[in-house]
Image 1: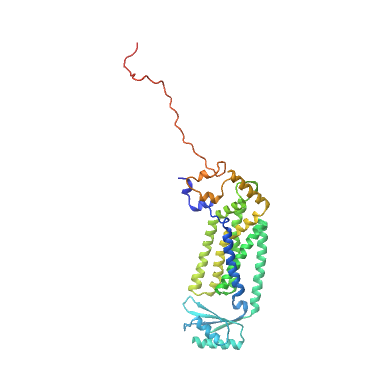
Image 2: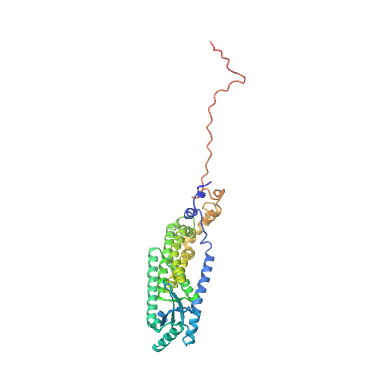
Length: 387
């Protein structure tokens, strides 16, 4: 039994003994990403976002729900009073008391008082129990402009950093993957109709940093594997990049899972069970962004980089040299092919002069024993001594 069978999947994956053909199947990942982006972008264009009062301006009411009136009944009641498209959310406190948060379009002082009195009558509480808070649309506009300005500055700075640290094509691939993550995270808010608040913007900006961190880690391994690769003829740029992805695959998965666990707690426990609306706004963007960031760094950014680099003349020549050497049996087979053919006869499929060729062990032969003169047949000692 070979030593490879004694090692776990993580060891074999890192050392190239087991591999996932991520770059070979990149077209399938491209199609999946394109479909998701089209769905998300279409929802944002035709359906739009459910903006909170911080962005569009309006009045926010909070009323105790001791009468246990449903969200739909509350929305229907407010619309019957002439207020269109109210946003109604359930809030749960740590003590178990429930209340409703109602957001409407900008109202006059008299309209605010009339609606507060109507809510007090509907929920059977006093007018003092109903709180209201008015927010102007100018504040939301300022927040939107500052967030957009910060996003543009962030993208420019990160692009220059990756360009200087690695190269321009790596920066281009990272930016495409980053925009992919942003569109997916924003599209989920549009599709599900979740309220977009300042917490959502903070979460999206946080996702940008995580997505780029994971992509830079993979690119650093790609740069290490492809350093000086154009001077040899053992593997192509795409194969070296695929090896780098497989070597960082488990690390990226583990990092993503560790980051998603507490975010899942915020989303499903804090938001859905406790009804904390602010936690839901923050956790949903983090959850979708972290998941899409882990996907794009492995399945999108590196394949895009490989396609961009394979267009360069030096790497096209390298690709042709590797193919020529493999036809003559002077270069090792592709990494994924070696893994797929792993078995008792796998060593026979690798060319003898390749770096991964296995050496055959020769069975040691027993040394010939020195034999003396053979005695004549039938002779035996007589016991007599010659004189």
